[in-house]
Amino acid sequence: MAESEKIDYEPISVREALTEMKDVSEIMIDLAYSAALFNSHELAEEVLELEKRVDYLAYIIDMNTMLAARDAEDAKHLIAVTTVAAATNKISDAAADIASIVLKEIGIHPIVRKAFEQVEERLARTIV
Image (cartoon, rainbow, N blue to C red; front, side):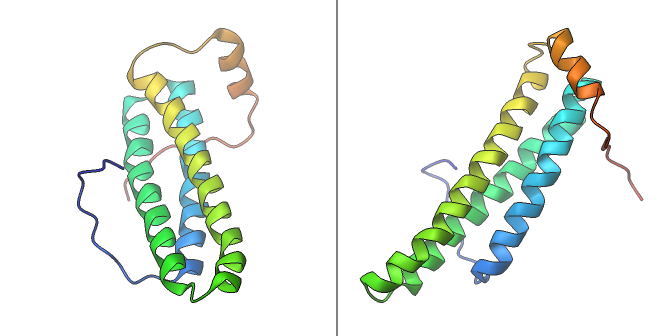
């Protein structure tokens, strides 16, 4: 998230934000692999858009946990929440890195492409 970018605070529960982060990061991984496999710029761009949402949710979680901590004991218990949020954000960053490879047209090595083809589940965007 850019430092100069203004962030509007959204009162969302930490549980909701973590759940959404998990769900979105899972979708991002599937979309990133599909973007690489099918060389789809559209899917890769979708991954980067979703990355913005995950970054925003991570920011909101950080804010909420800071606001919730009343003392050192509270802060100690909230560390687990921020650690999970940070790990989930790293997963989404990795998916965005895969998408960026597609958008920069670096190309996927044939061995990696073969591994992607072995994945049972494939994901594509459908407009309903």
